[in-house]
Length: 74
Image 1 (spheres, rainbow, N blue to C red):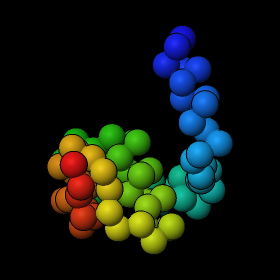
Image 2 (image 1 turned 90 degrees about the vertical axis):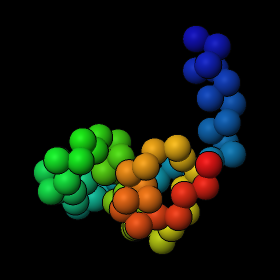
Image 3 (image 1 turned 135 degrees about the vertical axis):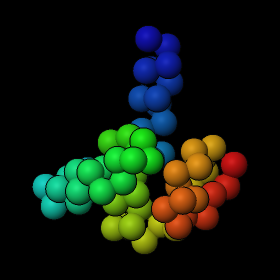
Image 4 (image 1 turned 120 degrees about the horizontal axis):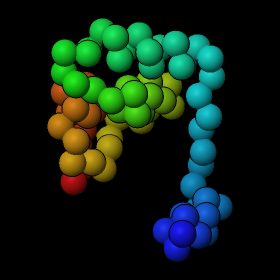
């Protein structure tokens, strides 16, 4: 529960971008298209959202971001 409270304290510092129905469909299409690479729904949603927002750099240890053409920092 402490982790949830800590995260709640960070919320004002973050910009939350809720995905639209179109972005959700694009996420599902990405998941289906790349299923052989074992991508998660969260990964695919991140890719779609990042592209939508024009973000090309990610702090991650997940190799899938680099495979999708993002610059990886981490």
